[in-house]
Amino acid sequence: DTAGMVRFEGGTTTIGCAEPFRSPEDCLPAREVTVAPYWLDKTEVTREAYRACVEAHQCLPTVEVPEEGALLDPTMPVIVNFAMGRRYCLWRGRRLPTEAEWEFAARGAAERTYPWGDEPPAPDRANICGAECVMDWKNPNWKDGYATASPVGAFPAGDTPEGLTDMGGNLKEWVAPLTPPGENERIARGASWSSDMVETHASCRQVWRPQVRVDDKGVRCAADGK
Image (cartoon, rainbow, N blue to C red; front, side, top):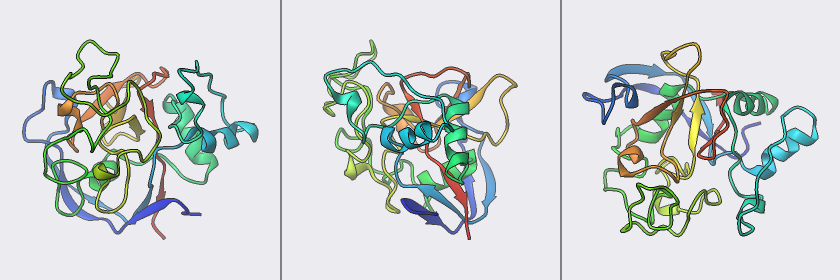
């Protein structure tokens, strides 16, 4: 079942960066990769979708603290750790995307700088850490209307040309690493509501502890192309 997914025919492309953004871990060294055909969820997995897995006794429940009612919205993205996200995708008959698949989708055949294109980041394109953000490093000139996560698809101007939403903001997304960084570390791709503008770059990545469920990380599932 590929409902709610976007198909990619795959191909050979360059991913990564010639130079890292700020640290050696935040971008793969530039390399050529070949990706087989695959499908990728149009949106980050929502609370509503994840709840069905919990009710089927196949996923661990999540416990959220309501914040002005926003977290009760079923279209909000679910916050999960690595294992929770992988388990959900397997329950759906899907899997985590590889790091190469995620970046291939974010950059497209044109090898875009950002998921939406080569135009610089703007508040109507992505939910990152702007004026409303609760973090110390917030950008007071960036007014996207959200202090934390937003409902999926709330920034259509930031969609990829292929139709994927929130690849440049909202939540970072767990992926299957191309090169495992270490036994106790995994990779999240994309920017989140707590990111600055640098992290909206389609090649940016974060190394993180897989067992930690933190409020800026979610998941988007993939499936093999058929």
